[in-house]
Image 1: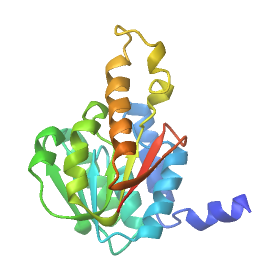
Image 2 (image 1 turned 90 degrees about the vertical axis):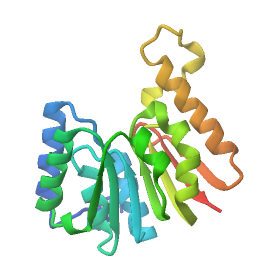
Image 3 (image 1 turned 45 degrees about the vertical axis):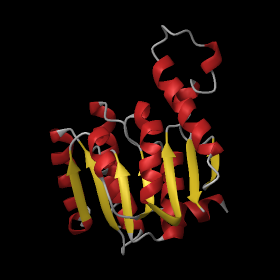
Length: 209
């Protein structure tokens, strides 16, 4: 049964592209999704079939390509500030045949998100972890009713759960503190139905009521 579901959700036409992208990311220290989180993202996109996707954190275009191949009717709007990453992402979008369905917003998400308008059916939050809590009200306002917010890396290598044991001098203290604030606000927000999953590096799934 496990092998059946693995075959069901695997992306046959572009598997080699994703293998190469993952190898490049590992060799060059580019953070991309862990395998468990990737499987969850593919499943959620296939279920939701969103018309418009907003992604915070393009990197090399791995997750963006993944989402668009899982949902041929979707259009992706993605934010990235690193010029080299933007160039690589553009190449990868082209290699996967999805470049015509991508709009890249070039710049710092901390400045762009605050100015954005429009509505999205699915938001994938995978940008600067310290900013998750600041992004939340803006992302909430842009998310359609019954839309899904998927936030990746919310447990941050276990440091968020272990926050009470960290000293302020610990290298992870700042990020863990901000992520903890984000999760507290997210789970307390009555406009969302949210769950935190111990998948990959921690994923929060939220549906806007």
